[in-house]
Length: 378
Ligand SMILES: *Cc1c(COP(=O)(O)O)cnc(C)c1O
Image 1 (cartoon, rainbow, N blue to C red):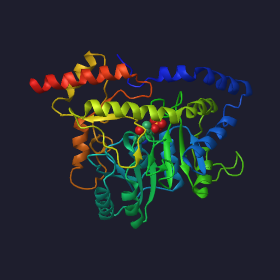
Image 2 (tube, rainbow, N blue to C red):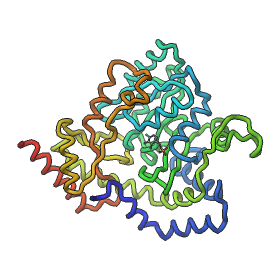
Image 3 (spheres, protein in one colour):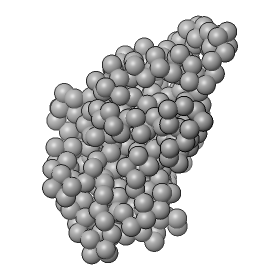
Image 4 (cartoon, protein in one colour):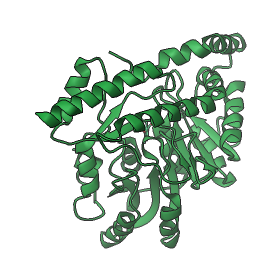
């Protein structure tokens, strides 16, 4: 089976540097909040143009830390897309607030502004206090912030961007990290910028939120370690992971270019057989996933036939969150969130990583074309 994401080739490219970086940490012994952590935070800030970066334990904690910093609690409504990874809604429920599920757009798969407006009204009808919106940049493409932010503004909501899949992307000339009040990302190994374990970060221009986040990351600490001024968590990023990320960040821009190369070739090869990804004008995706829309009646057959040819595909996501057992009791914006439901039945993601060779990719394209042709004639 071909790799869906080829972390081995990337490791080979930087292995010498990673070995040296890890050895350095072992030599100085600063395993917790060692010098590499601060260095990485500085480099991440330079990369995307934010003043403040807080590295942390993972992308889920990054979201949760911001909700804590914003004092989100029972009775508050936070608007989240239904078509996303569970963590986006999970953190809202975890702090006792109510996630209100919003539908997504059929072309970009990102939050639908009209559905957001309906969701805000729904929350008010339910006597919840609308507090914030978590915008997800699904599969690596920034959502349409110019359409969503004015709605949030109009209703006095703060906005957090869940950029677990999109760190490194840009929207109309601005990098992900500066598009919302706070932005979070994940360094889970399979994300576009991943470490060799769990990791995450929060980006903000707001120094007040930043100082609260910093305190929350270490048990709500005050001016020293054993003064606790609020309830926090243990949410630090390991120094070894920071050292690895510094080496990965050094090749990240080049990798994003390579991902675009792969996406372009897929687009050409798949254009005539399926709906290829739509990217907004002036936007650059990180291509966390390359996702086609296929005939729902054929999807299982396509998956099986490709698997038999050694080509892995994945369905992200088979069920929208408002249909999941754990989240079915929470409100939805209106109607059925029919776009989220339709997408869940039609999406199919293909192998995507910067090290996908042209010959391998052409094999994937050719094989997929043949599978589609067979299905059409049967
Ligand atoms: C991966 C992911 C997260 C969670 O990140 P972890 O580091 O795994 O906790 C949150 N939101 C989205 C959209 C993700 O894809």
